[in-house]
Length: 50
Image (cartoon, rainbow, N blue to C red; front, side, top):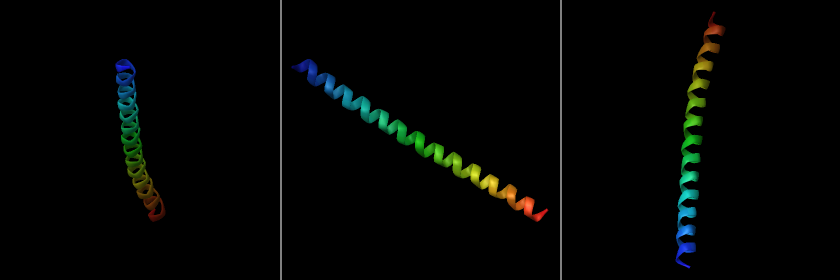
């Protein structure tokens, strides 16, 4: 009984850790996309100005 409880606690910990990592990855990817979009909009502005 103790073994199964320990396993369930470890699995819950691992799942929450994985979800936290996915959330961090998602946030970092969206930040990268936002900065690249800003760079692209700057280049298009330069194209229109030229």
